[in-house]
Length: 288
Image 1 (cartoon, rainbow, N blue to C red):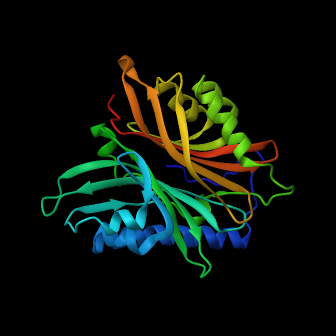
Image 2 (image 1 turned 90 degrees about the vertical axis):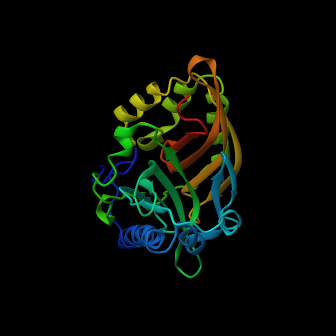
């Protein structure tokens, strides 16, 4: 789907061996994660791959992933996914992957759910990538749900690369707070200021969007004039070039109905300040 080398507003990044190797390791970790879910169970896969601080979402609220999955009963559902987009920071210690997923029953393999997943990974002291946050969106659209398997798999050459910092990054919480405040008043205007030239936007019932034109179309199709974001946590990459926040969201959707759910914002420091590199917004009832 998005198989080309880009960097954001600062221009095309040169692939440094550190980043290329880190991107390859990140994608391999994601593929191994998915293979474990298919071969064993998604409960075992998550418990093997989650960071000790890893976050997942339960009923729209962020919780510790290890605690959540440890408490789940074993089941025989088949959870399949694969990465079509990935990104890695300049230090090679943090990245994200995204792609389609599908949940199937056994043995009939009926489709129970489908959508796009989004995972943030962090490299630990042993050099192993672990899932720091796992989220995504669910499609109620049968057409999008049926598209699983039709998108090309990510590889190290198709990753989004980050250029090394040439200056000390400013405090990311200032940019994040400004975005949150404006989003509560005018959501489209907040995005217009915050998104980078290649920001991965993921929404229910819409294809993943990466370039400016697709981003604008996605934001327009949301039909949301305002949105309240409540931050529940954040993480910096070791080199301070990335910062991401997660939490709960609420907005008035179609027909004046209240929507509630969760968000993930990945910020990247660029020459013109902090910009959104990835944005995920999932509603508890995406059909509203």
